[in-house]
Image 1 (cartoon, rainbow, N blue to C red):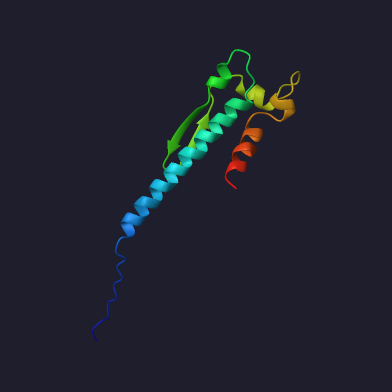
Image 2: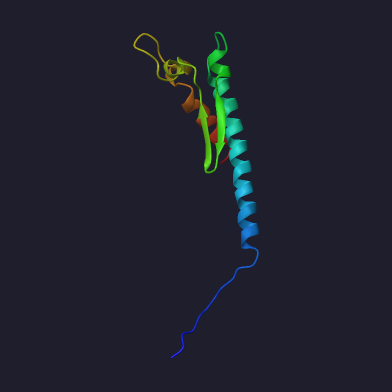
Length: 104
């Protein structure tokens, strides 16, 4: 008995996937740009070093935002003698809330 073979081809799917990936990349770029602006807004300024330290890197599946300035962690979490920035809320939480509000 001979086997039956079915084959489905979806024409144009590769172009749709490529377009969708491009749209996702554009959206990630826009959201990450807005988030970096918010992070800079919520970063306290004495010398401006921590504020200028925010860096964004676009990746295949999203983005990463970093700040290599050593004392940024203290601004975010506080210390035993100093509360966190923004009345104890830190930097990241308020920035995420502000950015999230734009995309609801």
